[in-house]
Image (cartoon, rainbow, N blue to C red; front, side, top):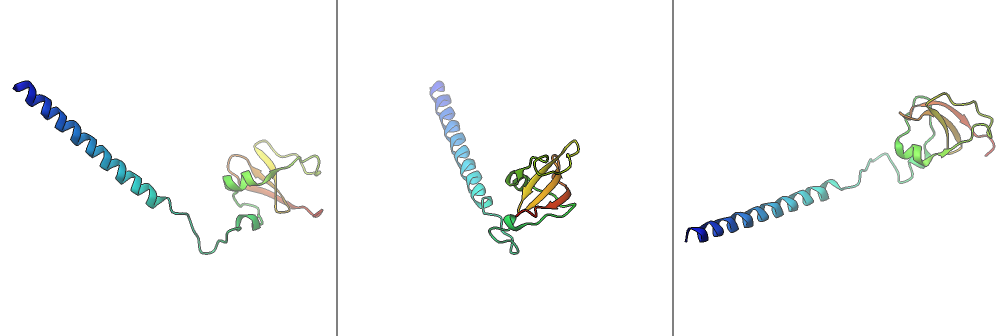
Length: 113
């Protein structure tokens, strides 16, 4: 009799733990759906990044950096980038920016376009 009582209590505890875990998963999933809304700004259009013209001191984000094409500075007769910097081309601009931070150090317009 005593063994049967322990078994039933253990079964009840396991059922309650499973129920609590299920509820926690549902709450976490619902919170993820709420937070998954797209980021929107009223002053940005769908192609805002593609129209950006860079200025010295601007910071290129990781998406901007990845979207800009690497440039062979010798082929375009640009000066050799200092250590930790790289040339990128974006929207007719050659951009010299820090690789680690994305801070723009220099911009040259591509007049060949």
